[in-house]
Amino acid sequence: MFQLKFDALGLIPAIVQDALTGRVLMLGWMNEEALRRTLNTGEVWFWSRSRQTLWHKGETSGNVLRVHEVRADCDADCLLVRAEPAGPTCHTGRESCFWQDMNGNALQSPPAGFLDELAEIVQSRRVAAPDESYTARLFAQGRLKIAQKVGEEGLEAALAGAAQNEDRLIEESADLLFHLLVLLNERGVALRDVLARLAERHTRATQA
Image 1 (tube, one colour):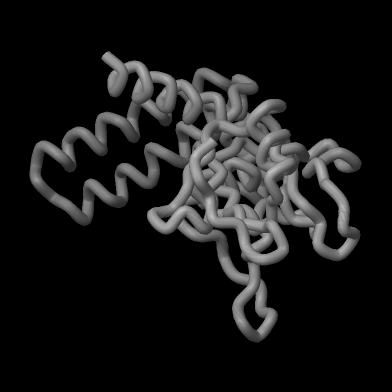
Image 2 (cartoon, one colour; image 1 turned 180 degrees about the horizontal axis):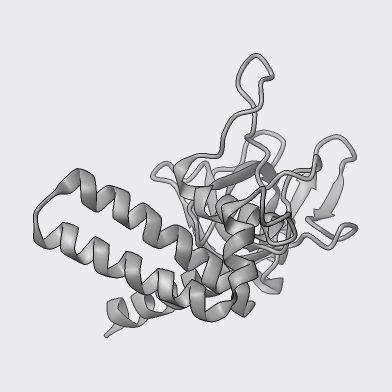
């Protein structure tokens, strides 16, 4: 194993990052055994400093963290664990433990995780009343209408790009992404699956 620098208590900090969105999910501590189990089982383990015992993240809730990769920093005294969460990481039910500012005020999601949250909003709007929500009206009109909107927005984005109109391209791209999320939801396709496919392609390209 790489020569890591554990502290006087035999621990090393481990930052967990969503492997697909890049969002920082939590910070935990590992001893050598927790790290060994993390690498061997493919799911994240920590050392609980409060309980003084090994802790399999998600063992009770089911919200495990499936490991994609573990990296050490340049000084070998901190770990970065890139993982895929099976559910909310924070015990509060939020996606990330880093959801508040220094005054305890809830923050909006950072850009890296915004598409995930927007996909959740789209799902919630699916059951809303059509007269109260544009998204609900799209769902009420059916799959063909949603697919048509994706095509229209894609054409608008292409035309804006060809015309070298940056502001218009940003607007049309935002419309395209939104309507694509609606179409994915209507078809029962998770955004995470799309991101995973992109990640697979990237891995194949870098290994070619």
